[in-house]
Length: 355
Image (cartoon, rainbow, N blue to C red; front, top):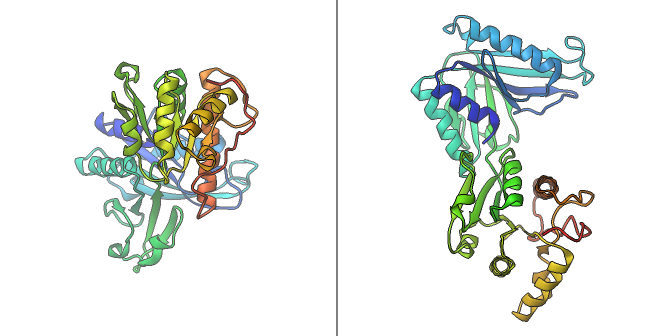
């Protein structure tokens, strides 16, 4: 889960007032995109909307709202236009419109954020519809905003957070909250697996983390990290969603091979990475070929894993290289509407020796 949402849930549970700041609209060059969010309390802050003087100014406004009368609409929701060059001296030079939203601790508000969390963990996008000119409650929408007096097509044709006006001319923040996507299925809870999950937990993705050893999983994992402690890890391959990304790095080469066989039989997998050296890849190719797997199927295996240029064998180094590789693949997925079912490896000349 994103830092701002997990922090917001904690603040509500502890009855600590907070202000959520959302980048609602931008003009020109700015440090963050519409939909970037940051949470302020009287003493703390979580996530980032771009750093520097922009966040300093946002903190001033947010904490003034927290210190003021909470019954006034202006201290519950407000929209601020901030010119980065003239007013703050930042070199970006663009203009950022920030929406400030005071978060109360009522049960109805808590249920809204719980619903958003549940939607994200199931891979479902949601829109936050926040009225800026009147005190109607925040609403979560899936694909239709017509009930709010907004044009029916406003959500269907929108691709990012934006400011809109309804049929009465009132302003709304229509905030796209993208779900934790895609799904990564990671086999192995050893040092490298744990390091990868630690990085993935900060990114918009969902992880199914599989191992036979239940005591290997750390406590306090965020909700988008689902653990599966099972004596039959092969079955977890069938649990994965179509289009999942697989990473195999167990404590056993024999189990790695079994999982490889199971994954290669799925025609709907987006990508399959196997930790190991070029020598391990050749051994697996030979064994799998003897079991009837074709050359085309074997080409689906990415081994070694990780982007080129990062050759450290420390768990943290491997995690950075592998997550960067996944992020490259995800960028391709969003920029190319119909990617190939099995993208080619982005690290065919990675160091021989990992795993």
